[in-house]
Amino acid sequence: MPRFGKPSRHKAAPTANRAAATRMKFAHACLESLAIALPEEKWTSAGIEERLRPLYERLKLPAGRLELMTGIKERRMWPEGTKPSDASAAAGRAVLRKSGVTAGQVEVLIHSAVCRDMLEPATASFAHHKIGLGPQCQVFDLSNACLGFLNGLVTLAAMIDAGQIRCGMVVSGENGRPLVDRTLQHLLTAPLDRNAIKPFFANLTIGSAAVAAIVCHENLLLAGAPKHRLISGSCLAATQHSELCQGDSAGEGLDMQTDSEQLLLAGVEVAKNTWQAFAAETGWTKDTPDKIICHQVGSTHRRKLYETLGLDLAKDFSSFETLGNTGSAALPSTLALAVEQGAVRAGQKVALLGIGSGINSLMLALEW
Image (cartoon, rainbow, N blue to C red; front, side, top):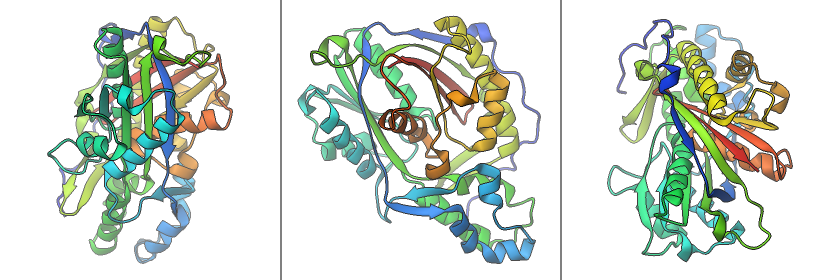
């Protein structure tokens, strides 16, 4: 199994100058519809630990540590052989069923997942065909770790405001099964000690999900349809931390190693500076959002993030407990679930707080 260099143990360095944060405003873009597609197969944290029983017994690890440390009870997995485009297409068809626009009106399709069918052609090409979109549609991949979907929303909103298009779709189909399967195999066969298993721990939090959104010009909305407006946002890059979480293909599976402790510290620091830029751009204070949706990592990350940003944890809506970390699908899937369950209602202000390895952070203001 390919191995990366030993994760860096340096302390989190300061992020880029806050004044240099990229700022964005949107005039006419609305999140017209949003839909998720979830696998039926569930993998509990207890079940994963049972598969790792020989390792736990050899290293004298206490059972229950995976759920205790992450708050993740279970995650879902697509059937073996599922392609990312299969998952994305399922979400894409679902969002069209909910939408007031037709497939023929979609002018851009962005596939934003970490997972891809292959290097060439773009996974968006396969998803485009499986969704049933028209030939007039511009098709491309946009991948940026766990931020890809939010980057896709920003790209479509900018194209709409620039007058290039009136309607676009962004999809993400994340398949965590190959990564988790390969990680379990490695942990059971390699002569690892307690310290050596740490870079692989984050892999066991990964799950699978798919999500799709249609973004359109407000004038394209049907009469009486709600305007879920994308208002503005800010982003920051702190790429001196790029080595803290790295993933690559490894034979038929995937390989990923993460310095979870340093990634948490550096990620929260980047998020703090991005929030300050976001607040300056939007005029929002910590009290403004009615609901807050973050990237879904686990309970420790959530607690540390809210404490550092001074945000009210009661405004959080999470899905990591039952879905785990689903990469670029995590935040938008959580938003979709919040809407379905009535946790996000018409007229509410929603803060989308995205962060991805690299490290990059993107925060968006949404008025539902």
